[in-house]
Amino acid sequence: MRDSYLESPDSHACVMRRIREICPAASVGIRSLSEEEAEHLKSHPAPIWSVRKLRALSGDWKPILDALTDDVFITFDLDGLDPAHLPGTGTPEPGGLEWYETNDLIAAVAAKKRVVGFDVVELAPLAGSVASDFLAARVTYRMIGHMLKSQR
Image (cartoon, rainbow, N blue to C red):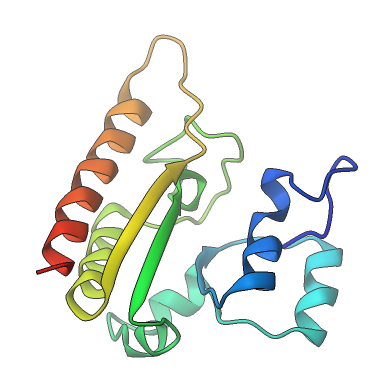
């Protein structure tokens, strides 16, 4: 949600800000914001669920689903997962999403919306370990299945 990062408005730290300039977007699994992002969100409110707010929904995904359009593109940032499960990412942040709640949310989105595409980003493989790579592959595999199911 930054306007620019390292003097570039097209940095990975600015993607959601650029997306929201052209279409609606919802963010789930947020655990930290910069001061700039927090100030921007005060004057430009957006549907955002921190991990705490997501868990407070207790599996009732309706508020998130209501914030989405009928056609959705899912960008899945692997650093949204807890680093205990996926440490191989550019920005590991404690308190992230768990495997089952992630899958349940993606399944709920695909059951109610048409997933027109997706990406999976922020894998930073760790030397000597394939755990993060494998989990990223599993997320991708599941996303393919959910996307295809949503288009029936």
